[in-house]
Length: 198
Image 1 (cartoon, one colour):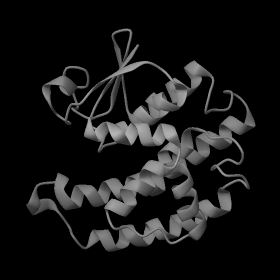
Image 2 (image 1 turned 135 degrees about the horizontal axis):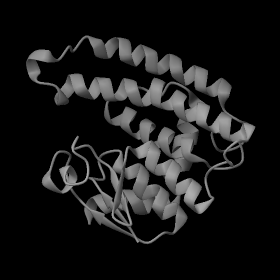
Image 3 (image 1 turned 120 degrees about the vertical axis):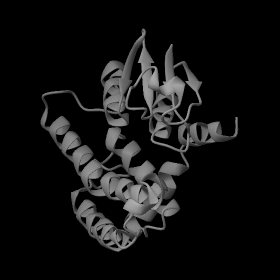
Image 4 (image 1 turned 120 degrees about the horizontal axis):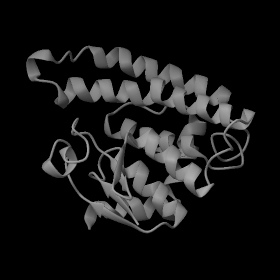
């Protein structure tokens, strides 16, 4: 059994969703960043943490990749061109979507008030909109990011689109809005999100 540490309103949702898609057994410890439960496994205090046989794995993307590889689902085989494309899309989403949203969050409530730059969010929104147009050209023709098969980048992208709406970063590409609606309708996604209320 896996143990997932972190709050649903964070990147922990990505891990919970993956585990729900896999149908894997897990325990969820609802712990806030920098709390004792988190620092005991990750000195940086960041969530999520996945504990496997007593060994903690940190960083949501590393956890998703581990789970996908371990279960042989939601990923392409290492060493294939499909995996290279998958990893490229993953890095693109982390660099162009996640990083902009995280920087905006840092300048909204994470950093000490005297270090926040409210004006930076305008440039981040501009970059976020431009990155959406780039992503549309990189997406496959199917219902998922890479085409007909759901992979790790789908979980990251859907979570980033959720985050964007909360942060008032507009989703300007109609295809992405439709994609977002489809992904949020998945039963495993709904079960993971419902853990906020448990």
